[in-house]
Image (cartoon, rainbow, N blue to C red; front, top):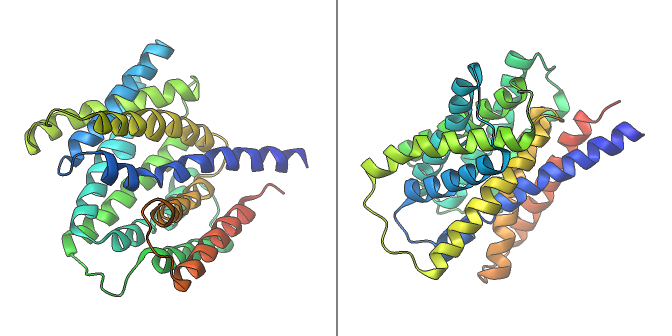
Length: 287
């Protein structure tokens, strides 16, 4: 009973991260200048990482330098770059549906790298989640762009590798320190990419500063602390299934804050997503 309680508590804390990530689209479109995705990604990661580094005052050592930069690229640099390419070239619903394959990729990678058994219920939950996300965000007019789809899949694979390797590589430091290492490394890798591929960011407005501060402090530092803490305590496939909460929250925010309509088919998708998350956690519950 106590094990189940601890597991449920860990899952609930981890779920806060993807739920907050669901607000990224609303904050980006409402508060940030358009056309600077890589610069915004860098500003989201690097200042937050440096702030955490000031708090923990501990640098990686030995092999953890390389691992921190590899994980930083998988979880932040490459993932966010592919995410933005997908978002720019695909309608939001298509991008979210393509990205929803990540939990299934995590299940396969967990088997390879962690020796985790493949659970039938987890696969079923993943398929239900993908269908639920499609009903929630996909429209009949959505068009497919090959480059956008490829970028979406590449981003999902990157985050899946980052999720599994973060679980496999656990340094003898706190989750706060591990988060600081990865965020800083990911931000550093984004600096030359943003400088080379995008024009200089214009003078930010108060709304821009607030939006970037929210994405950095809440959407990056706080959420990834919870996420990496969760990955040290629950199975990667269980954590990855919580990612379905992001499009769910994004849809709810669009309905509540932007006045978007919520069709009956989206309500069905809403229920399917929640059912998928419940089924996935059920399959991983300690016995």
